[in-house]
Length: 385
Image 1: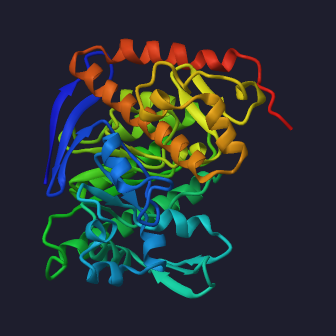
Image 2: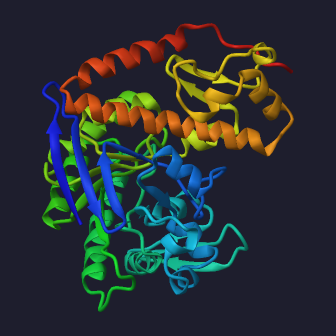
């Protein structure tokens, strides 16, 4: 496995690159659809390939609880289990554990928690997280970290960051000390930077992670309630010191404008549930903002979701039909809405890659924002009661 940096934008920190894995090549910047429990909700794996998804994300916490990492490993690993012969990234499980504050207890050794499924007791440590992810067999796996809560004061954020660094070292050791490869393909372990909303902590964490020499680095603990301007500031502080020759991953982010801003800061990889979750809720992305398909004004609208979109949904179905499906609670509504939203994200990052290659990313970003933000100037739509 390796990362190759192809092009850097002249006016921003945006970069074009590619990651080589045993399951295929990943062109960056890239958006990764979230397949929490081994499925991107509403999509078949054939849909994802058709959309041009190069890599998807699986969730360690959920796959560990159900159906179990050992079962998946016994059946050939996550790629074979879900019939996806392309790259996969798994998170560490830390975010899901820490988000259940009433069901978990943190110690230096790890985290004790109760399953949200049946209340059973479990324990997750850096070593355990790495073992689970190695059994799952994702191409890229993540060090176990503590997601710093928001809001919190400096001392709490520093304590959380220091624990993340200790756990990163233990994750690295557990990965390196593995006696044998569980699956025949190579795996990469990424470190995760934390530090809350404090720039000094973010920079310190990244500098010390670099000393551990991970093949890639992630920025975690953002988009958890802080303002957009503060999030972008922390992204810039986090990427400023990262080595150019290694990939950068911003976890759990975000909106189309978040991607543009973060790519300008030098981020290569993103994941977020926004296009899939919003699709299931009838919130559809377009180049001129978003539409909420349940709104009454679409009841007789013969136009596609986005007249500029080339996806199968926009080439085939009207807003009136999609509204009918949504209002009727038809399963097809979730399928078609999700398909369109994922196409929007994947098409957008494809255009961004082309813009970086031709040294016009800044111009592309300016034009995209101008069209997209025009939607915020429109009056609020009135939904049918």
